[in-house]
Image 1: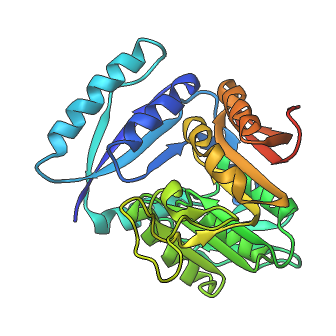
Image 2 (image 1 turned 45 degrees about the vertical axis):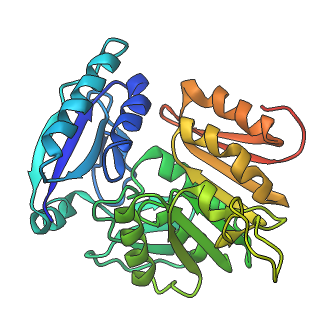
Length: 328
């Protein structure tokens, strides 16, 4: 199948809203921050002269033109509140896509020891480094975006050997793989986008972690079960019309990572909070700084306390745990 890439450059304050619009119609959303990198050994730096670009992909079929029209209407309204450039449309032949973007994906060093290496590059690991091999394809999650970097840094410090980890919105699977590399005994990764699920499963196999990581397709509130277990009929009884099927993923979890958006983190807070182990942590990322207060409020309302707040450029990651009603 061929695809159409829909891309929108927007000011930082409009990026989150544009991403929501594209997420509702496309397969996955990627937010390309403008970076400059002098060499493969240097960390990428934000380029302040260019706007971020939000991208999604739709099938090149009979419905594509109508989809583009709906997006353009939504972008017109968003543009009244902030700078949003015209929608850019590009047809992509799958085979061409798989090769064209590869030169722009460098080896990335993150935190103290995490190294993300494209599957097609050679890299000799140094002592103490944790190497993640990645072929993201159309799925979001290369390690370059600040939200992913913030999550990877948190995973380095929060995953203990033997931990149970949930990666909600796994994308390319990068965070699930990082957690497994840091010693997690079991990692559950989920995403609503079938393209992301396919890419994540491929990357799990690429890193020989199929025994540790399980990847599921579907919405979080349909796949997850609380510590008390899913609502299912007792053994031997017929299921009534309101009975729910058993959920494949059940807590408690020592770490939950939700690299999504502010809006999705707010809606998932009451779903994810009950799944935390008593001393577990939840990392909520993908949040623009100006919307961090909304997410803090949702986490607190779900019975969590925000104990740490990390920043990179205009993005925020929040670390929460069970506890009081305050936030730093």
